[in-house]
Length: 81
Image (tube, rainbow, N blue to C red):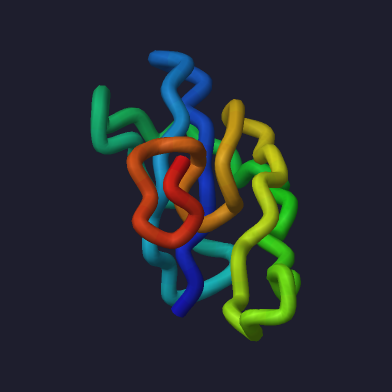
């Protein structure tokens, strides 16, 4: 059950939603419109840091403006973005 990013064409807001099927398109939580589309996100890539062996997510960007694909650029404990 992955979390996908969606965009509402009605109110122009992006949101994340846990979906049970790849074909499922949820209603917008802001305006409740059914006119939403799934966004293509770049996955977060892990890399090793300075020999300490800790995995640190790279700070890639998503289609919604920043952060890793797991947080969409909003207060994420994984990437700190």
